Image 1 (cartoon, rainbow, N blue to C red):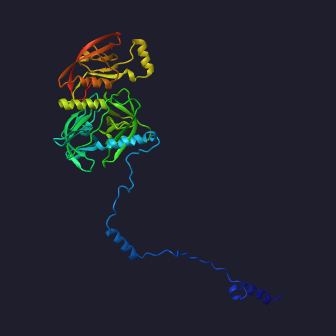
Image 2 (cartoon, rainbow, N blue to C red):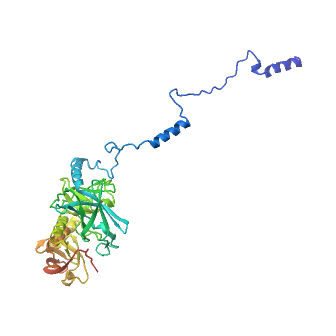
Image 3 (tube, rainbow, N blue to C red):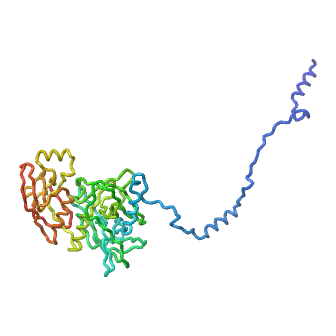
Length: 414
């Protein structure tokens, strides 16, 4: 084969297929542009006009019945299912006399809590609000409530937040640090709904609800069971404790001074420590305080100079041991005796058992507080007959204890 023939063949192969009329055309990549036939394009001018129209349009009307509402606390939970119907009814009934309360000092906010109506004066058109003395407290006790050191500002400005969304000036007419309560007078132009108190204290493990109002006056609802136990150094003697399941209860200060109610729509206490295992003042103490205030415009308490634990709230095995050793199964065990007190002078020591007050058996510290308040008749000093079992001597005696009356919190010195 000649060179020309070879070159000719190469030239044929080197020619582009586009020069060959019989060659298949190359496949080109197709770019498909899809467009929604229903779509429409908004120009910049249209966008600007829409923005101007939106800004000039009146704000939408809010309709409370249709707006989404997020409650401060959850009510309809699995734990509350057995009591949800009766509990809802009780809470809504009690809410009609539950208020918001706030205080300020020198123009600066101090506290925000709750309170509730307890009395109404038709002639003066004033209502009496019960709340916590924490409302005007400026300093907590540095160590324990029994060591003292709490400070209060009785001249603080107080505001009562009414249920119609308005506010009224509250006048502090009295506060009692030991029982942690305060009374406020508020001018109102129409009669108010008053609560019904349960005359007997709530039973152990009974279903209760703690309710307060937040800074928007929305209800805060916490389910719990009542628990009685011996107080710690951070508690006074007149407290019942909350036992709340997981997911219920927190430390929100708004609940302070709020209501504690049972399923029968009755008030069984007032919140004074809003925690899952916090505490409340039972209705028996509140009623005694209210009665004393109405009679004497003063709430006094005898200072005994002692701290106690109830045998009733000890472990059952411990109670059994004391019964086997001393034939004792009730009374108050003396934990501390204040140095220089009349109790110390009369020979009462740590470990002794107080069995009776003025001839009546005493089993719990709440019973003790109610007995002590019943002895106060507006006097400066009272004489109390105390039945004592002296543990080390294993003998009983009855001593006459003179105790001074005071509204201040009792301080125990060692």
